[in-house]
Length: 156
Image (cartoon, rainbow, N blue to C red; front, side, top):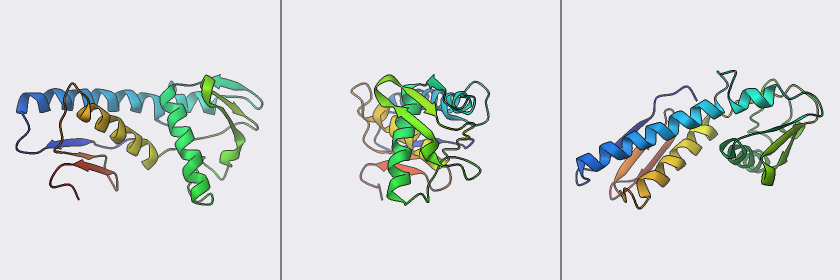
């Protein structure tokens, strides 16, 4: 994702609760970054990149969630959004959602999720902020360029 994330809270939210929630959000973002980054040789993106033609690998549920979302966005945009790099078709991947397995028809497949991974991270943070543990309702999550999520009386 390679971006700076911020979380801001409304003036009526308890400061200690907000601090704890922010720590939880940043820990979740770090976990997602480790799994979905193209900049690491140990991420799930690297695992998919390393699958040989006809091969299969097991990936995290986070990776599968983002792959499934990417399939939907790719279809909805007529292929304008395709997280594969260098004009390779997203159709080269075979997804076994129930078993978290990814297959490759013709290797290698390079992935770069860009904004969809940032959006996924913000959605995961929103789950944390809305959880029974925090029950926060007035906040703003910023995942960098064009990736924003807000809740509360001042939300856009």
